[in-house]
Image (cartoon, rainbow, N blue to C red; front, side, top):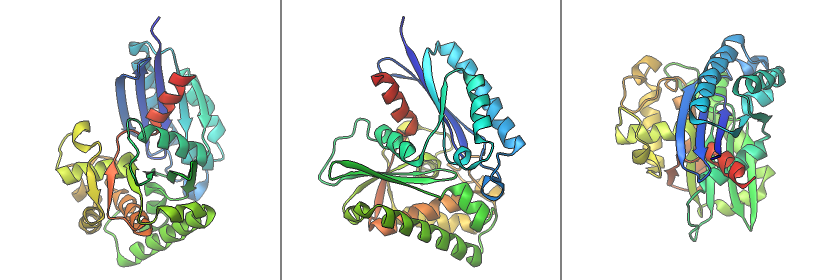
Length: 307
């Protein structure tokens, strides 16, 4: 019997699914905005409406898994569930719905899966490869440095920064300053905790993962509908990221939705994601990154294929 694997990522802002056959061929890749982290930063509890949104999507995914004949898989939960007092209860219910193993990942595990997924098919060049995974609640930076995978999970994410500092509407200078302070302090903590990151400054090929970078790539192309081939491995400059931050910060979330490439569900948190992106690029001293549609899901499937 042909084995079919699935990976499910219950992230802070979105719930995503990858179904793959035993040769690594993608059979289905899905994403739904569920905002699981709604209110977690302030209350340390997953809210009932956020839980229900996630359970509904997981039920939908279970049907897709059945239609593709999934034989095994892994569901992972990340920042929002790590931080929530009722995270274990969520994981138990999520596992009941999808019927595959489920785990809460540490920040290091999350970074490792993300790096292994993004590195799929890449040929290392003279510069080391690093990944930046901007999620809803956390942001992972990871790279192989001197033969070791070095990583750090920053308590930064587009939802967390929005709820704590940036706000959801037109961005005031005061809000921007507060968000920038929060971001800069956490980036400094990452570099203090992992001194090896200094070796990447001015000498790294950075791959950007997840919704902020994918949406930026779509906006840069001007896509009205998602096209993986158009955004995967698209080169994006720091100037492009800064430009879109300036454009979006002067708009309401509703106005942002009118822009080609804006993904519904990201319109209120995109400014925070872009400020994180620009700040990390500045700290690394680089002017461009590459958008990657291969991410933590691909890393999980690779691990299942090897098991």
